[in-house]
Image (cartoon, rainbow, N blue to C red; front, top):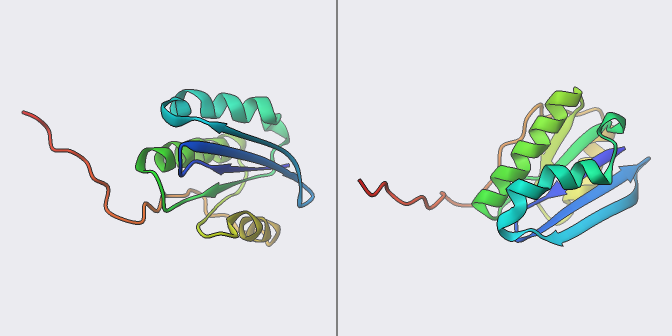
Length: 124
C-alpha cells in the first residue's frame, strides 16, 4: 500500500494505492485543524505497518499546509523505513507512483512554496 498526501490548500487530500490502483481516499476541509488532524486521518485510513511508500505533493501552495504535510510524510517514511517521493505538477500522483515503482527514494522531501515565505518580523 502507498499513501499519497496533498496539503497545499485548505482542502486536505489522502489517497491509498494498492498495486497502482486507487483503493481509498479521504478529502476534507482541514483549514486550521490540519496540524491536529492529518496524522490521525492517515492512521484511520490505512494500517501504517502495511505501507510500502509515501508520496507527497510538495508544492507550490500554502506555506503552513505544505510544511505540515511534508513533516507528516517524512516522519511516516522515516519511522516505517519506507521510501518517500515528492512531486509537483498536475500529474503528481501518477508521476510519484512511477518513481516509487522504479525504486526511487527522496529520503526526505522539502516543500516547494513557489515563492519566498512571507513571515512577519518580530514585534519586539
